[in-house]
View 1 (cartoon, rainbow, N blue to C red):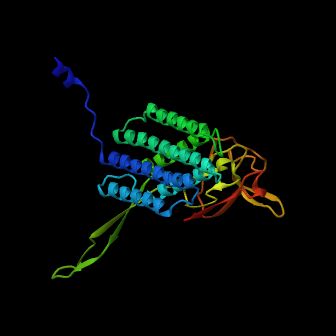
View 2: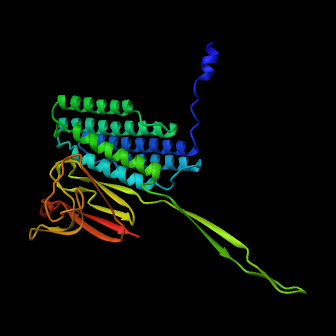
View 3: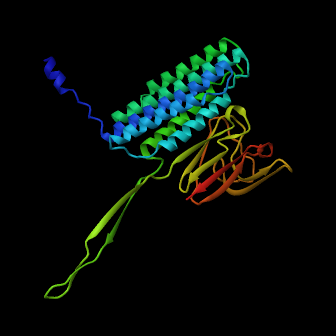
Amino acid sequence: MALVLGASLPVAAKPTPAQKCTGAKMKAAAKKVSGKLACYAKAASKNLPVDDGCLGKAETTFTTAFSKAESKGGCLPVGDASAVEANITAFVQSEATAIPSGGTKDGGKCASSKLKAAGINAMAKLLCNAKAATKNIPVDTACTGKANTNLTKAFAKAEKKGGCVTTGDAGTVEPAVDALVAQVVSQLTTGGGPTTTTTSTTTAATTTTGPGPTTTTTPGSTTTSTTTGPTVHMVTVGPGGTLVFDPATLPIHVGDTVKWVWDSPGHSVVSGTATSTPPSETPDGKFCSPSDTNCSTIQLSNMGATYEHTFNTAGSFPYFCAPHGTLGMTGMIQVSP
């Protein structure tokens, strides 16, 4: 009876090469973000600059893992390592800025613990997604929920010891991690957009001369090229309450989308220019948060808010935060073909 019942249970389908590749890449991304934040955590604990060798090791491990995954075949998309790496780097730098050590021994220990916890949280959530992608099932909410619980506990434990420059910021780090994870998952599952395959055929004429009429044949040769579609890039708005966009200058390609994520309240994204001397903010109406309407008015968003805009033409697109543009909170999107 036991054998019969066991035989009737459904058997999970084997992962496809594409699913295996996606899972492997997500695992590599998970290790990268955790590894780089661990480098910053070590530096914070000693109140020293981050070790470039430590960061380089994390980057090398990440690149090697991506190459290994793609060498096995079946990856959809391919060649996405640099885009994923750029978003992880931007996130890591943002968190390192948002969780300062303050230059003291206790502050350094607190910042170190929090940076490690942020890295572990991001890694855990990416691993939850990696498991789901490999098995082609929904992400286990219990898995991501456990990661958030551990983050909250780690931050509370660090703050209990005292000396923290920032407090109560677990609620700020969590949505920032979620935004990064969502972006990386999107890049690794869709490339941020469709993949286009173009096939072109060229012909070469061959003439045969014989005792009869002349015959011309045109054998064709076919070339197929695959181009990865647009990518979604992330910019953090006011990381840790600072009056900056991170990164301030972002190079992208035509068709790419920029997603701004609010890390502190009371900011906006407005296309145009702003100067401090003389104080001036001049919107140009090309785009603005939260919905590309009433761009000449001040429309502030709260922490955790997001805003997206797709850039369909090449050029340089300056923008600022109203009302903080005159204080230097400006950014630039550089769009190349």
